[in-house]
Amino acid sequence: MLYGTRLRGLSIATAVTMTAAFALAFFYAPMDADQGFMQKIFYVHVPLGIVALCGFVFGGVMAIQHLRTGDARYDLRSYVAIHLSLVLGAGVLITGSIWAKASWGHWWVWDEPTLVSFLIVFLLYATYQPMRFSIEDREKQARYASVFAVTAGAFVPLNFLAVRLAQAYTHPRVFATADGGLPAKMQLPFYLSLLGMALMYVTLWRYEMTSKHTSSQLRALRRKLAGDDAVAPVGRTAAPTLPTS
Amino acid sequence: MSTPAAETPRAAGAPTPAGDGPDAPPRYVPLGTAVRALLRKELGLELRAPQAVPAMALFSITTLVVFHFALQRGQVDGDLASGVLWVTLLFAAMLGISRLFVADHEEGGLDGFLLAPTDRTAMLVAKALALFAFLAAVEIVAVPAFALMLLGPSPPLSAYGQLAALLALADAGIALVGTMVGAMAVQTRTRDLIVPLMALPLLMPVVIGSAKGTAPLVATAGPHSVEVRWLLVLGLYDLVFGLLAYALFDYLIED
Image 1 (cartoon, each protein chain N blue to C red):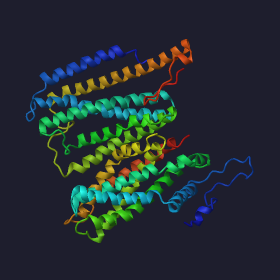
Image 2: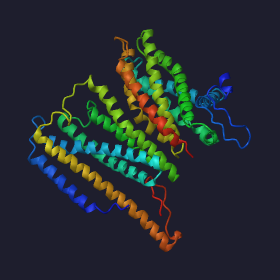
Image 3: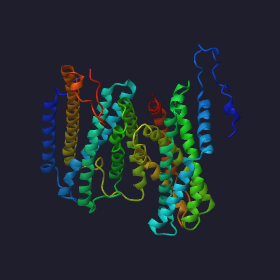
Image 4: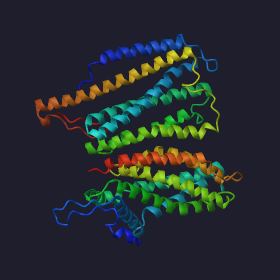
């Protein structure tokens, strides 16, 4: 399957949507009465977080497919999805921290259940790559990684529930969450930004899939042309390698 | 360890064998029989050559001493006491989890089990029950030690009954997650690194539920009763991870 076919269109759509969303966020959306200009980070932070979590769940769904079919391509899809979500997740934690410093005066606030839940999920997924790396057998690596991805995917909602319960009664929520009480003029930039982030995720996912496919095809071609000895074997890696056909 | 029931594999429910000749299809071993046999093996091993439980118990008492010096307190109560207890128990559990599959992996026990004509869920159930038993044994030592060494004014006896309920629910969750993580980690090169890194975030809801639930039990003054919702959180966690482990465990010992 070719992943590179619609990359240009997707890239342009992503760039246009993101530019439009940020333009609207800065010039159309009203200033927040309490937080002022700093509230603009909301249009980056929250969509990024939602997309990252959806990416983790998508990785889990692909992992289920991998366990059911045993097809190595699903493992690659799951790996790329989780890998990208981890990168976005780091962005979520950094933007969240900046926002917390600006509006609450501290770099990290334990009272905010969404942020804390996200940190736990991030820490859990951070073990995905080390675990893959420490299993040498390719087939076993893929299977175990899929089991992990499914477990962690199911853990995400459970964790959010538990963390929210732990704080719901002891600390009153100071700020409304993104889904509740958003004025109409903030909704349009927010949803557009969400769409832009989702498009960016899909685009990046496709780029990485294309890259992985191309390099595995390149290896196969080299091996065919120059013989098996000319191509160095793949070393130990956390990334799945496709069977070269 | 005398369980006469386990000696009779042809107990009620076993399908009648087609024949006992060498060409006969392998007789399917019912789940209960397999679980009993595996559990007997696990507990027998631990009783004959105690390894995991003494190490875990010793570790938990050492951790309590560490807490005494690190916190620089002779007595703790309330939130702090609850936290100290659960950190101690959780870290002790990590030791048990990383040892859980090692003997089977190194001595070929898993291969032997895979050759047996039985459901692989039997291994999950037996290992989880064994880990649960180990945790319970450790807690029988660690909780009184904690009460004697660090806990402030002694709570009423009824508090210990409720603590036992919390411990049972939390242990079930730790046992289920621990069995999965242990089975996963034993195949990696860096087993002892992977276990805590993976199990601790996964067990975070258990920590939240049990620490929040325990805090009023060990407070100096208070109702000394567990809020029901923490029991529900732990119960829900056990249910979800029970189902997940049931669905996924087969893939972890497929070789």
